[in-house]
Length: 88
Image (cartoon, rainbow, N blue to C red; front, side, top):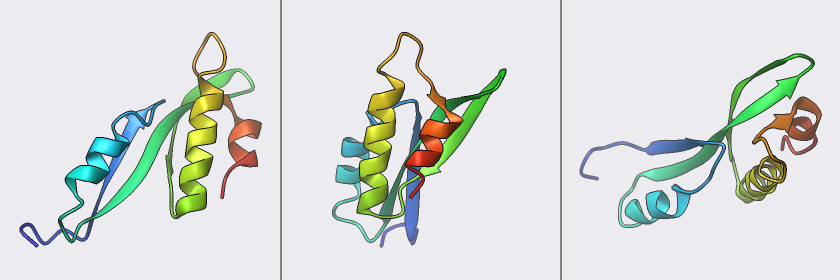
């Protein structure tokens, strides 16, 4: 391995748009891509960003579902309940 880095992550804000090119760029290396995103989460009267990482293929599918859900309304966000429903 050129840099001796076992893994590196990408976490876009409210999006997974950089994931494919990121993973492709690591294809011929020993470095494992860790995929994630930062979701704007609303709870009661507050909101803030929560970083979510996929630990396996099911986690990746859940990130895709959550990303789609967060973009399904006029303002991009998730509720805490929506996030917790797909936490695995």
